[in-house]
Length: 131
Image (cartoon, rainbow, N blue to C red):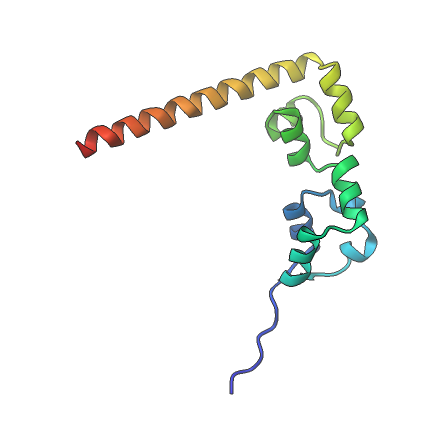
């Protein structure tokens, strides 16, 4: 007889990262205990009000802020943004973008264009080598 397996668990920081939320803004009971995979899946499929509100209004962690602003996490640091921002803060930045944000968005667009060019070049090389 094999012993019963213990369920896989996620630490609060890992769960918060996967859920796209800022851990210190989550309820204390979320911060204080590990979640089983089933509990995590339940949070994803039917988020409680606190999770929905946190995703909607923030504060948001840096990866989410960067994504909403259309820049890299490094761009946030270069712009002096080190603290989490709320949706309201992000909206204000997008409505009246400071110089650093305009520059970072331009840089990010150039990076995306270059990545697409390289991807297309690699596809062409694969097609040529297959011939």
